[in-house]
Length: 107
Length: 120
Image (cartoon, rainbow over the protein chains, first blue to last red):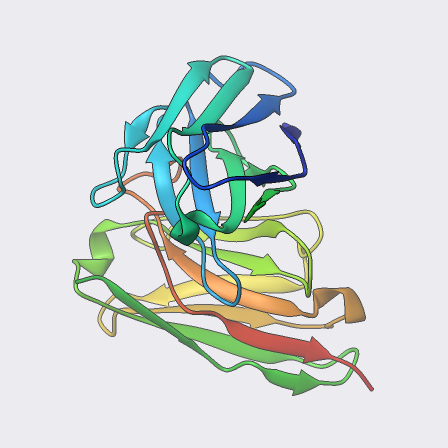
């Protein structure tokens, strides 16, 4: 199985800050990496697919990058509504696996 | 608008069974793979199962293999998860999630989830 790791596990940042979350796969997954946002008590929401493609309706302050084993999710200017836990997920092969999540809150 | 509505969760004793349903609308259900993902209280996301658009192929996480089955009724736009021999560690919110035309695809829409509690 492909193992996914994320760092940091949590972060606090100020409104307007640039925030970057990293995700690492235990083997080459090409571009097959998704990012999801989950707000407390809500279902996850797809933000980015194929490593860098923004899902329809997602604000442009979110961006994704990377390939093979190393990926990033960047929020260019943190907003109050971005408070959430962010998960990466590989879909290169079954079983699908998620990272442990990164909790983002406001400093 | 894509809508996914899970139902069937509840309290069940260890060793018991439960069947979850996910009613889909707003898209051509029979064209898309579907998935179940669960989240234990305070924990992260865990993929549980995938079924192809036709229902002809399924796959499961090792943690549920042999105990859970997944099926779909494309005439009713409904996905099912049959859970047998339930354990305490199966306690979680269960989400259905829409995939793509093929199995290896993103989960682009999610239901609101249904809570399954396994306890005596």
